[in-house]
Length: 623
Ligand SMILES: *[C@@H]1O[C@H](CO)[C@@H](O)[C@H](O)[C@H]1NC(C)=O
Ligand SMILES: *[C@@H]1O[C@H](CO)[C@@H](O)[C@H](O)[C@H]1NC(C)=O
Ligand SMILES: *[C@@H]1O[C@H](CO)[C@@H](O)[C@H](O)[C@H]1NC(C)=O
Image (tube, rainbow, N blue to C red):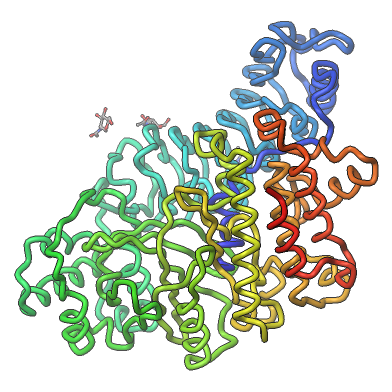
């Protein structure tokens, strides 16, 4: 969905690295230049940096503080040098293998430098400086490789960025001795984090459940903070608050997000309604005492009897009896052939947040019957009333195409809209391409990439047939909205949202609005989907992250421009991801043809752009 789309930006986008257009020619010379540019704005360093001499080579072990692996620069360790001045990050973006930066024990001031331009960094150590000010909430969302973040003993203020707590590999987090305030955001991957210190800040509110394994020595000396680990306990939600609209929303989130408490009871449960109600009461008890936290500590496998009549039993009992729920209606199932479940089942599911973006947030929810789904809480989608919303989602629910993911269910209230769909454990194409160079990526060979491109174009063709009356049938095609199965079959997701999205969010929330015709004259059409398809094709063929996905073209590569130029100059092969080029040299011709198709799709004048059926046919011909 669109939420996922933009969303991914905060969660998966994470993994964007900064890529320079120029191939790795005479790298040590330009590395030296980059370092010298960086040094230019530093002040007061003692003489240790004097051996950074123009014309000499930084590696190996020649320049002070420069860590090398052979001839490649991997780290910059400028500690205890009394440095001030500014940290000029831009030149460092050229150091493609830079993974660690340490500026510990210097005298730097001002806001946190733009290290988030260095998407591949694994460790940042800024301890004991005088950096100050707020860190933007999404600062870390382009830094998915980060494992170690030491910002302690500075003068940072404002909230702890939620993007920091969502880093998938975070192992060490030290923020002690700052002035961070507000609530501690939920920690998405608590299993990884093994070294934490948040003491001596101004944090307040409940300690999220995801920090349960940490004790007081990591959280002390935050006056407003409360929770089990500390001596100060949190006040419980009182009655009047719990009947207010605000708390109903809070509770809804809570319900959708977590409820593992009940699961143990349910596993051994007899099927009587009494027992069901006891569980519900139990869960409600807990709701009064906990804050919303994705639960990751629940038992891993939960067995229930296969003939679970749970959803229907609970459904009936609940609507009259659960105070907090009486304004909520149940889920509407839209994909009849698949399993049925109720809102309560979902509520009892343990959940974790996957993404958070312009159009909403997505949670992975595992129900006690083992079914795992994705629940999306939609924001900015108030254009359709309940009936219209239902009609459209039901229509999507009936879609049957091997490359299109149909939703399973939805829930609609004015203030809460949920769309439920199947969970795909392999994640998105975006992640597969730009994630890390792990196993998954390695297997994205030419044959699989061809399969993915074919599947995407066929799925898009289907959506265009089904939603032929839409202004723009898909509207949000980009690699983060393409999910992959284990066998590399792509599944299109988050399509058809154009009629739903509030007018003032549509340009931000839907990728079709990044097409040239839209930027020029606010016009989107089915041809805008063709443009988006072209971007995805070029992305798959080059393996590069398109700058088109990022706001303000902040990072990534303008692959459309690059491809057009290379074709004009007859250098098409330079576009091809070296990984597939070297492993399937015999297929170079097909790769070149595919790039030409991608370029034809991204033609900036929509009238001269191929139409979708022609694109599909051309892609079918590439074998
Ligand atoms: C830290 O920041 C606070 C608030 O901006 C300011 O009052 C204080 O002087 C700063 N302290 C240092 C050591 O810079
Ligand atoms: C907190 O946990 C650490 C190890 O995780 C342990 O060394 C320390 O003694 C504990 N402190 C308290 C107050 O329980
Ligand atoms: C956290 O930092 C504070 C202040 O430096 C220190 O006293 C405390 O021992 C640290 N706690 C842990 C668990 O490292």
